[in-house]
Length: 148
Image 1 (tube, rainbow, N blue to C red):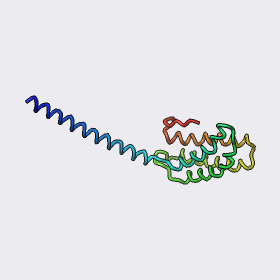
Image 2: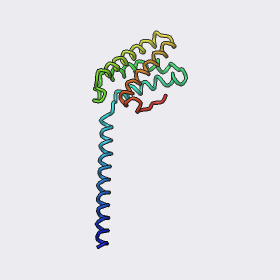
Image 3: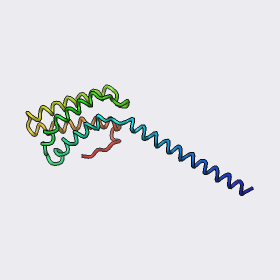
Image 4: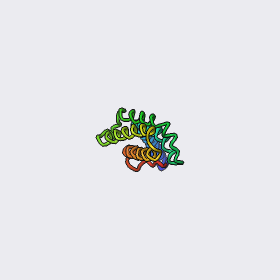
């Protein structure tokens, strides 16, 4: 009798373990699908352009990359403004911030041909800060650390 009870107990433990593994696997798949559904490709494209322009300035006061990339940054801002917004950021505040980013990106593109290096650097820094406001809204304000 003890032997049968032990066998039944072991079978029950194996059954629970097998079910738990399936639930964890299904949960992991659902998380991956949720993460995919929560991508914002237009933000990523702008981020790439911003990094190309901003990091050389931040790291060594080199403005040549932003002078070369300013038009691309403005195009990326235009594309971002016109792209569909993911559900979690589809609100008037984000739309207004995106419009500000576009306007500032356009202004920087104009400034690189007419402004001083000091003006360009200040404009780029302010634009970078605007970008991070949007990025923080997407990642939940501080949940995403982005070092420069």
